[in-house]
Length: 149
Image (cartoon, rainbow, N blue to C red; front, side, top):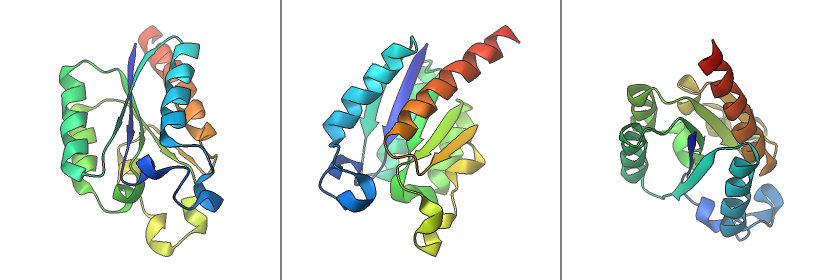
């Protein structure tokens, strides 16, 4: 099984950007952790980060042709603005878990709406970077159950 972990804008600044909200883990640490969590549940993982909406759309579309089985995605600021990312997820039909490090529902009102959640099979909010581990594990279990059905 192949998973793609996608991170949107400013997540490359983890450990620097607002550590009181996002913690002290760096993006490189997050990548290492995510790949380890993928290994732990028996899936191959790849991480991708971009600050550019079109690059994220392109990578989601390429995931379809690469036969990626599942996506774990923190779309960051594009959560609240990107119909293009929503449409790419819907077009590919790849099961996607949406992850947010912070509890977006306790932050500014504009962060309360998610376009990505309209295509996600699950959303994990406010569990810190552990939300990625939860998402990877949940998605692996979900896909294995789907293949047995």
